[in-house]
Image 1 (cartoon, rainbow, N blue to C red):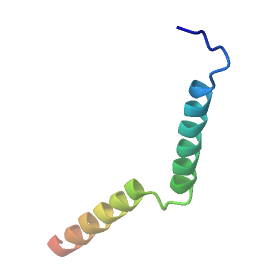
Image 2: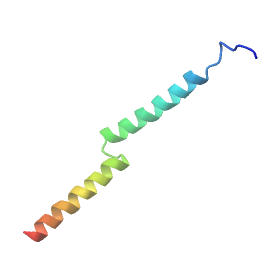
Image 3: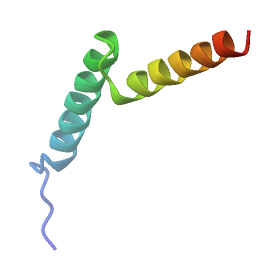
Length: 54
């Protein structure tokens, strides 16, 4: 088995993961991430129902 010290697989994988996380972070900052949208809908519905019950 040869020893390959020039293998950049780990570096490439880390860069790919960080690029993905940065994109997700930017979506959260802009309040466009899917999780943020779900929370917005949940809060809107719960506030609407509270007004209905009052």
